Image (cartoon, rainbow, N blue to C red; front, side):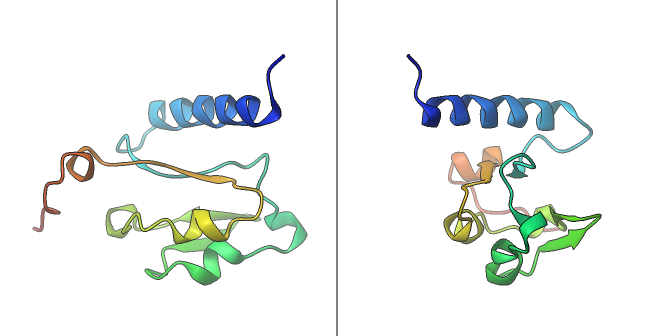
Length: 101
């Protein structure tokens, strides 16, 4: 028997793979539209993002200016249903400094 937590993790992983296969840089903040409760009035991720990078558009939260995200995890921490996950940029995983233009 598979637990609910494992099923949710697998679902989020699959959504992450779908997200990566779309036209995007292969990293970023993933908001699970199935578990997000923004339709019930929640705006925690938007209100607590220290970089002011999450906006409410078309009835759902969306991350703007992805290259400016600090990957601090505050949005995921304040998300009640745990609808936010990350795919970290390779440079963060390797401990390299952020490239500037």
